[in-house]
Length: 387
Image (cartoon, rainbow, N blue to C red; front, side, top):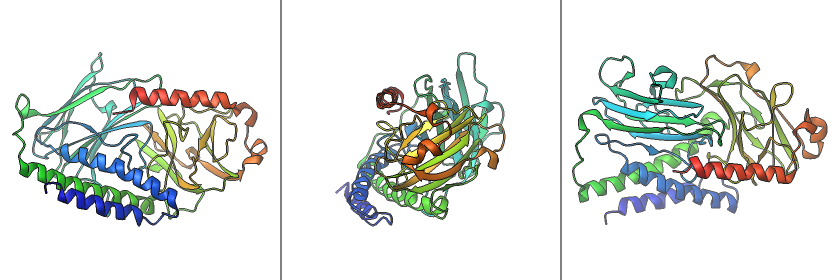
């Protein structure tokens, strides 16, 4: 049958989930099977978007197609390319905090991270007074709003990043192969569809295996309940630094993460599950940007990671995850960050927070106030993050 290869890949993918090294109980498996469903959806979408002659942008990850410790503050888009063709990208710059472009020479695999051939943000392009822009990528010589595609260029990734979920508006973007504008792709054939189902199966397995390997590369060799100094994010994002760690906390414990509020336009913290995906950021406060967070009088942001409600504004909810990942990102940087810009971490008893958390009284929030924050998150995601 046409879908045999894809069906076989789904069966193999279920084994990958069931045999994942971190699985300890039924809840881990339940989350894994939910992750599998989103990955199946995303793999089909990506296989049908594998169109380099009549390309279009697809949302690489979202609330229901998560992967790769996806940032709740970011809209991710990608399109496939040929390195010997010219592409025109047109759009309107929204009011979001950052808009960046990256050319990769392939896709992520269980053994490797693709090389970043070009990476820049919208400060490097000319944008009209009405916010409109046009960028070209191709084999020609670089110039204003023209970026050379190096040998092996295979994918264009675009990231649009929010800091204020309610006050910033997304832009628009589209892509076309320059010499195919006004033309149409050939009609579908059975052979093409069979190939796409096969590609979808390969993408599914690669996606799962790749991002189960990532934590070992970047997180799990670190001491638990610590975070690294700020460092340039692996993968070539030229204007992003990050600090990474993993936690393991009892229900009566809290991790306090203290970090200076940066002069970077974007600074955000998030939690992730052992499946290396974001926790539910729609219905729970599992992430915060510098604009969303309470700032203490000394210019520092203090986040409290715990299962029990600590009664403070900057509570990051574990949502039942005793173990998980924590990451801070800084984007649109104009300078390198040093250790003094990074986080300090301590683990305390939740009951001891009033004595151990500086400015505790200024950070307190009542349950109805916290519920209002969740309601605002739900509305913001529905308005601008689904796709």
